[in-house]
Amino acid sequence: MAKRLELKSRLQGETLVRKGMLKARKLHEQIRIAPDINILKIGGHGVIDYGREVMHPLCAEIGALSRDHKMLIVTGGGGRVRHIMDIGIDLGMPTGVLAELAAKISEQNAIMVSILLSEYAGTRIHTGDLLELPMLLKLGILPVTHGTPPYGLYEYPAGKEMIPPHRTDTGAFLIAEVLGAKSCIIGKNVDGLYTEDPLKNPDAELIRDITAKELIKMDLTDMVLEPKVIELLQDAVNIREVRITNCHKRGNIEKAINGKNAGTIIRAE
Image 1 (cartoon, one colour):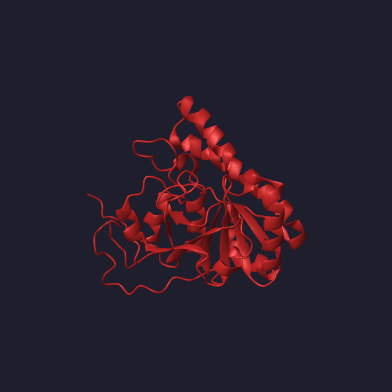
Image 2 (image 1 turned 90 degrees about the vertical axis):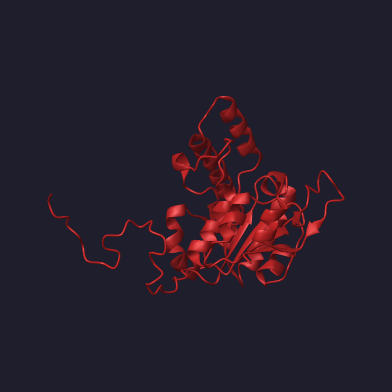
């Protein structure tokens, strides 16, 4: 048998799946690409779809905050995503195709939001532009991107369901983690995470502060946040908490940026 050609490295001959492979190796702290940026995700269904009455004051608030705080705005998809997924599921589209279709909607919202923020230097960027953020921020740009992670046709299987598990909340979290951001704030149309949907049950209890493990143990039937975010939070290196706030209420975003609990804080541990 011919001798295997090996390139000298500390992972030489490794399968890259062996348990404990890196235990004996000194791991260096990960570089935080944009440690002073705040990732603000504004939901499509809970915010953008409300139209002018909600979005114009919200964009004015975001624009004013961007003068003192570095921010990246991440957009959700909203009602049009629900519509296209309903059609796609009815037609038997694979999960990866549904992910492709959903991404187009959140991209449309990113274009509209960047235009609404244009007087504050709002600029639509693509996922491939994220490594340009340090330069863009120094230029005074307020970047806006869509939240659907670019798995596309490579989206994870959805188990017994068909809806892609990695959607825009998850995308915002993953962006925050890879950038080593200051914060990850998820803007919704409710005051935070509740034990039940507060729009259906007014007596639902608001959860102000909880760990990922505690939340998973509760096994809630419905949540305002994508379950995948909770799962990923446990293993994150840079982002150790996610803040949920009602961005229909003025002042909540500023509180969240300044480290205050303006709704719910979900902690890694």
